[in-house]
Length: 229
Image 1 (tube, rainbow, N blue to C red):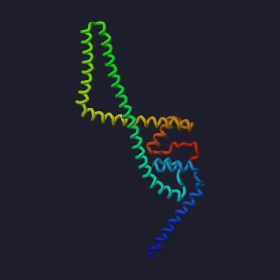
Image 2: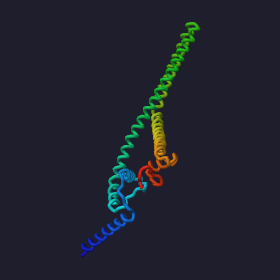
Image 3: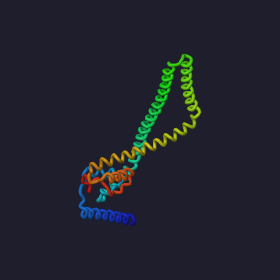
Image 4: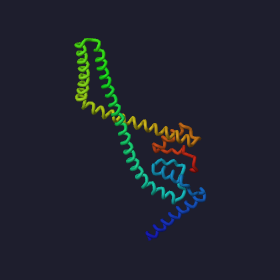
C-alpha cells in the first residue's frame, strides 16, 4: 500500500510538471534559440555571470540547465584557475626580464660615464706635465676602483636585506602590473564594444566590462546587436 501511494504521488508530481510545462509553452510562445543565443547563455551559465536576459522556459530546459551547470561550473573554475596561473607566469616572466634589462642598461651607462670621465682626465692631462698627468690618471683609476669596491661591498653587505626588499618590490611590481593590465583590458574591451554597439557609450561599456569580468552580471546592460530576446 505504501509503495502504491508513493507511485501515485510521483505520477501526480510529474503530471503537475507536465501541466506547468504545457502552460509555459502556451503563455510564453517558446521559440527555438539561435546558436548565438545558446552560446551566450551557456557561457553566462558556466562562468556564473548569469545576465538573466536569456533563460530557459520549459521544464526540460531547466533540468538541462541544472545538470549542465553542476558539471560545467567546477570545470570552468578549474580551467580559469589554470589559465590564470599560466598567464600570470608569462606576465611575471616578461616583467622580471624587463626589470633585469633596465638594471643592466643602468649599470652599463654608469660604467660608460666613468670611462668618459677617465678619458676627459686623460685629455686634460696633456696640457700639464707628465708627473701631474700620471697622478691624474692614477687618481681617476683609484676613483673608478673605489666606486667598484663600494658597489661590491654594498652588494655583499646588503645581500640579505636586499633580498627581502627585492621580494617585496617584486610582489608590489607584479600587483601593479596586473592592475595596469586589468585597466588596459577593460578600456580596450570598452572601446571595442562602444564601436560595435553604437548605442552603448564608452563609460557604459566600461561599466559593462567591469560587471562582466568580476562575474557580477547584473543583466541591466547586455549586447543587443544579435537577437538575444
